[in-house]
Image (cartoon, rainbow over all chains, first blue to last red):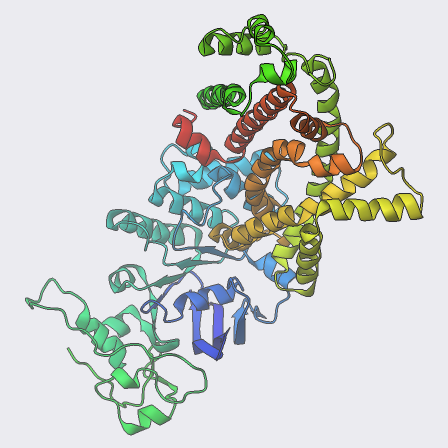
Length: 325
Length: 312
């Protein structure tokens, strides 16, 4: 259970923009073990999707610079050739995306698109189609045979996401990257899809890297959590570490901002200020300008990741951490 | 799919009908009287009356129109005043010549433009992209009458590789096809390129990569396949345009196609021929539109649904 599958070391991603570089991710480090559900949480634009896409080198614009190591099964994917990556994509690491309508090609039936991936392994067509139907049943697609012959626009959002999951698990990868898989779906479907992902993890033993902005969702299914803010991973730990003892002011303030059924408070708390523009050369903690506990040091020095317990790490100068609740 | 085709056909027939009304009305809207043109300026009033009666021009307009239309259905477009031949006979010899010229040009154009456009989209902003796009753009900006004459000068007069004009052998077609091809390539290439760039930015292309497909497979199966939808439609749409639009090229190289026939008839006020050519070009346009709609329906399942409510 504790075998390491993916280890990311000091990953930085910079985007080339007109007036220099934008630091989307800075010095991210974490590891995912086999069969684990690892969640990365953070607000929009904090770089969580960038991390997910850079693992398989799927960033769309090709104007990015990726530094650091992406060790997958003892091999650095950041140094891999395009050909080596092709062998990893789909076969070893599958990936599903935010909007399942855009992610499927409108001119092919969904079954054909799932089959296309299976056929890469040089499997006879008939056998591949049987595998498609089998996968459709595994992802609880109602009326699997007919749905395999449907076009994407004939399916609902939830069904399309099931197709994506079927497509990406069809070749039995070790890791599934799910980039906000339920953001475009409504709440009941969200619950179904999440239950499905968890169930498939138990069944296939596929580790899952879940990218989301939804804390509730994390609490429900994740084993390990990384909290991101403005391109930096500020805290990592087990779900219990993060939810019960948040050490970083940002995670702590976020917990306070969550609506809770048990408390009778009129308004939700918010964090003042806004996310700074991220240039890579600026020193200091990126949360400093919004942090109520910031000292002078926070604006001038980069805090390092500090180990608190075997599983819990935090990137903050505050020795004892904060719990604002 | 069947309902879809029937619907397209009905719209096409309606369109043809409207154009025929306009073409017929043209005769009455034009200054002057066809009878005076026919009989000449020295004809007596009684002679004009006689001619008018002979051609049925003294009947009510609606009745005239119906006779004209029903005759046309039977392939009778009347007699050319200039050639003293049935208009249908003239059209029969001109249409194949034009089709031959335009279809070969189109085929060559798309065979060249599709891979080039795809490559330009894939290697956007590279040196290859810049050179290809700009060279073709310059060629398009050059007017075809100038390019045609230049080609004649170089390949027919100076080098004497190819004949100057005529339409007897395949060699006669080389220069006009080249002229048409060079004039049209840029717009086709740009269309392919912009469509391919759009497709490259689609999320399903990322999915295709994430699936583990090779670059070439992604380009062929996902990028090219979807960008070809609009390109195919464009092929059909440009056929009628080409037939009438090759006027200049046909004129320069002395090719007796539809363009040439139309210009001649307008200059000579050869009414029946003008009406005939316009009706044929309209029919072709309508036909190509229907064909392109059908092909579009086949290529893009979303359109099939929106028109017919699905295959179920």
